[in-house]
Amino acid sequence: YNYFNYKYPTVSDPDNADDVSQAVANAAKNGDEYFSIVVDKNTDFNYMYDRMMNDGYLYNWVSEANEINGYSPRLAESCYVYRKDELGVLTVELEYVD
Figure (cartoon, rainbow, N blue to C red):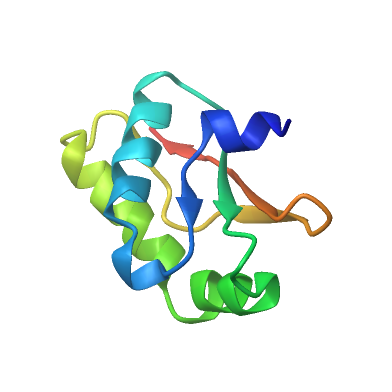
């Protein structure tokens, strides 16, 4: 049993992760402070982290979440990410812009 698997989206390919933007938008509507992404157990964790952080996927997901919510609330497009390698989870600290 892994709490993260039931609450957050699992991603195996960042190019096919449209549900992540919607899930981030929902988290923002709820005023959540954190949002997690579960890396599929068959996907290299470091690869996914690198794609999210260095290839702009996280930025794109947050930007799309802002569009979905009509920029209310508006999330900052830069954020801190916590790695939970042993669980295969990346947790994003959501920051809101006034």
